[in-house]
Length: 348
Image (cartoon, rainbow, N blue to C red):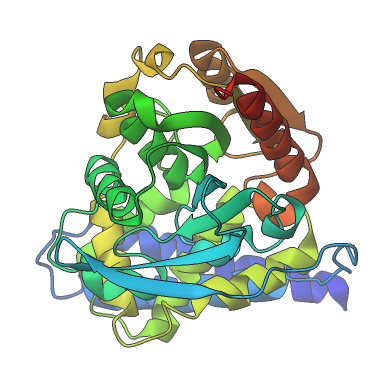
């Protein structure tokens, strides 16, 4: 029975891949392009959903932070973030930035392990992502522009120096921000970050090539592309995988989801991370680079990043891409170490 199920799943995946290949080969304005994109979405969805998602218990020691949401209009953009911890004067800010296809809830298991007296945690939402998707429509939401949006938000919050934490696309945004404004950096932790030319991954490149058709699909037919990206990058904790899908799909499930996803795809280019290569030495602060050893973003790029930053490289055995969800203890330990080093360097 199990063999028969696997055969059916593989057939769905083969048909989906074939339909995606035809869609890519067709001229941009072909009347058949949307049809083949739809077939690819349906078949990939059938194959991916049934073949991958077998729940396993998540770590019961991990308790998620409450969802403390804030929003404000900054330079004409409604920005959204979470804030946790000690908001008293003199507290050290820790600013966390997520990637694609996630939002600030990515850090839910990390935050309780780092917040304490004298520390305030912020999880900023990229413009055009998560529940801020509508703010990205008609705007440049590239890595370089996101750095400018984040800088404006930091000024709005009155944050002059902080410890920064970035995952995936968020790590690229921080590389851009802190090479422009190294004075902001009290410490830096990059976890499974985009860097140099190590991104976008294959599933995202395929979806990007079909973004004009994807934006015309209903949300339920966009979900297979979302799943393909999530699975291509990967979780090694199956329970967290299911939780992550349910959590991060919600913004995309809205009517705006397909257009917002297409808008994200068209701005995913490695030119910004390539542009800061050779400049990262300007970030003079305690740093750590954390990497899942099985991440689709090559470990070689992570080690290169650590070398250029003068950072300690931390490998997570068995880890895949979404380490803040699968391995929050290890990510939090790196943050806490950098925080301690930053405090030692802080003027008395």
